[in-house]
Length: 125
Image 1: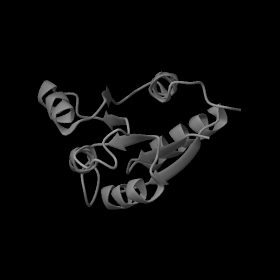
Image 2: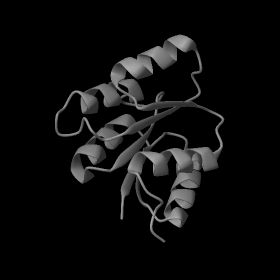
Image 3: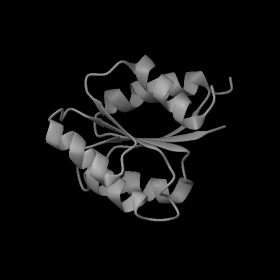
């Protein structure tokens, strides 16, 4: 079963994504601030990370940069989720190594499709 790490300080977003992705057959791990998210990523080695940008303790851009510049984690796809839709924010996302930059509000079905495309399969279940 593929592991997905969801890091967002908005509990309803985390729970919605977790519910749909687990129903689709993925194993989800969740964190509600950047520091916990970074620690969890290093601990569980997820197959994919869904990462908010604006969070307490460490922002998503910094987490993405820390993971993408570490050879142990650089191949983990990171989908950035953010309310920041300015072009300059998207550029920062690309510079930090984010694989996707998705602006809120978003359709959960679109996230599931992106997750499946990155993980190269439909989830089991």
